[in-house]
Amino acid sequence: MKVKKSSLFLFFPAIILIFIASLFFSRHGKNKSATEPPLEINQPNRRNEVVRAIEKTLPSVVNIGTEHVLDSQNILETEDFSILQRMFDKFLRSQKSAASYSLGSGCIIDPSGLIATNAHVVERAAKIMITLNGGRNYEAEMIAGNQLHDIALLKIKNPPPALQAIQCDDSGKLYLGETVIAVGNPFGLDSSITVGALSGTRRRLTNQGHVIFSDILQTDAIVYPGNSGGPLINIEGKMIGMNMSSYENAPGIGFAIPLSRIENVLAKWMLPERFGFCSLGIVPGWEKDELGQRTIIIEDILPGSPAALSGLRKGSRIIRFNGRKINDLLVLSRLLIRLQQGDKVTLNTSDGKFQLTVEPLSQGNPLQTARERLGLNLTEVTPLLAKELGYPVDSGLLIADRLPDTPPEIKRGDLLLRLGSSAIHSPKDLAAKLKTLHYQDTVTAVFLTTVTYQGKNYLARRNVSLTVR
Image (cartoon, rainbow, N blue to C red; front, side):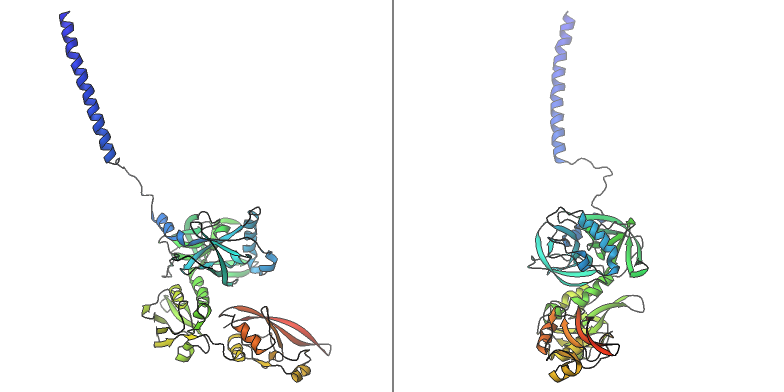
């Protein structure tokens, strides 16, 4: 019995020591885990190049919506747009119970609130609403649109400060198989992202055997109707195209308008003559040189402008603008729309250095302006002349003679009735209308003309589409 009591006496202190040690090591382990993160073994980096490219782009992507959609028969009359229209109609029908319609996406191309999108996205919008990434809503207006290129330019009314413009890839280089990302904001609440590869760079898009586009980018990044107008970007987060549509019978094949065409179209609209009511007179564009490199050139010179009077020539390569080297057409367009009357411009071109001063936009003689900008050689109608031609008017403007660039449908003696929605009865009416027309705008001219049938003369109306120069 004595031996058993002694063993029991030694056993209890051992248990107490073990308990104290366990408390110590437990507390030490908790402190260590609180201060040191767990060891990561083979943890992949989820913020890869694709994620970073998307994060860089999203602030520049917007949703485009409207509270009312116009009848498609009133707007999309061009047969070439039937493919886009069918897809667009399906997208709208899916929202038929909504109080407002999401039409598609767009991207901010200038911090002043300029947005580029597809023409088919906004053709049917009675009132254009823009939702920025983050949810803020603004009304916008359409500055210009071109169905042939399926590109439109919008401007936010009263835009917020410091909008982030998308970055564009100015290298002109595209690589088959490179990763591309179709970004959109289809409903104004969240983004839509699809990732794929660049499958082709000069695809032909046809409708009933007629070639609509011949330079389309093809990708397997799915382009949903709500993504139309949003940017197609590369792995660097730079825009290389504009999402347009998917192949109707194969949704896994997406199409995008290449950046080169977008920039060329925007360059015809983003001019000081449109935005600053002042004139420099150059219309930039780009072409490939003998080495296949993209170069910025003077594509056109506006008649009577400072550029025309300075001796600048069409086709000259633009090297520097006010000391800044020009490699990006959109960057040059952004500089041009900020010009104001009286600004000095130093233009370095392949023909030399030119000093220009931005002048106020002056219409001058409206009859002369109509010759230069519309190709119409007009003269005032007298009562005697109207009687001789059989026109039931005492005043107005008629074609005195054809010019080399007068549209073939117009003939000598035709009486101009309207330009667009404006009735034209005098040079004053013509001058007022010309102030609203800008370079590359399309306007319908309505003429009264005489036609001969079975030996008798009859009066008839003729509509002629004119492109403003």
